[in-house]
Image 1: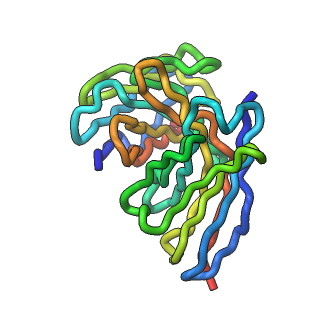
Image 2: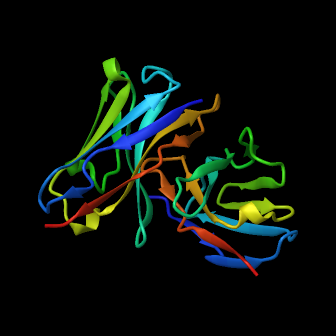
Length: 107
Length: 122
């Protein structure tokens, strides 16, 4: 199985801050990498697909980059509704696997 | 707007069978998408269980393959999950999700159902 490792596991930031979350795959996955946001008590929602594709309806302050083994999710200016947990997921090979999550909290 | 909704017993006895159904609206189960199950626990995080295509093709997580069956009912536009010989370790929130695939074959889960908590306990 491909292991997905996110860092940091948690992050404190303020409204208006620029933040980045990284995801590392245990082997090259090209750009077969997706990012999800999960608000408390709700299902995950896709933000970024194929490493850098912005899902329809997702604000442009979210962006993704990377290829191979190293990927980054960036939020350019944090809004109150962005304080959630974020997961990366690889769809390069079965079984599809997820990172352990990054919890973004208000400072 | 595509919506998915899980349903099924919230409590299953150890060694029993977990059964969940996902009702799909806004899309046909026979469309060019795979249909998937994912579960979430506080300890193991998000775990992909498996997926099915309307043709009958399936892919399962090897860690669960011996216990999992995913099936599709085209007449009801729904798909189902069965997990046998359950233990407390199978206690989780179970999500169904559509797998959207790009033209260059990258897939992602969208949308997800709201989730169904299933507890394994006597």
